[in-house]
Amino acid sequence: MQKRCKISIKKFEIIVELNDSITASKIWESLPINSNANTWGDEIFFYTTIHADIESDAKEILELGEIAYWPSGKAIAIGFGKTPISIKNEIRLASKCNVWGFTVFDLRRLKEIADGENITVERVL
Image 1: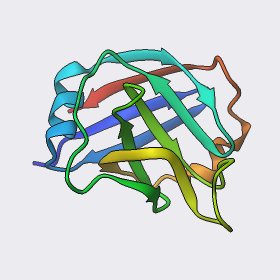
Image 2: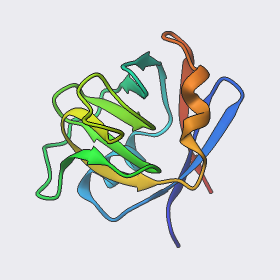
Image 3: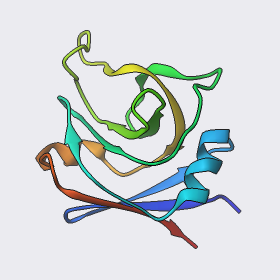
């Protein structure tokens, strides 16, 4: 059975299907996570206590719906549009990140999230 988690921010509940990566396993084992949102253009990221190394398929440019882990910052990153370093309309993160999950939730709805909003991530069983 596919592992899933729920990211709750303000009024939004985002169901994420985890992939089979090492990072996804580490995140799953660390749940639940409670943190606060930081914004950087059209990206929300939040710090965790998780440590995962950069994986071989890590990338800087995400597809809408991909959920990533930023090893340099020990943070989960949710990109949904342009960041300060994007070229054209790409979702470009600050550096290479490990994609650990995917959601069909329209992440562009997160544009209204402000710095400091409480975020929880928990298992969906």
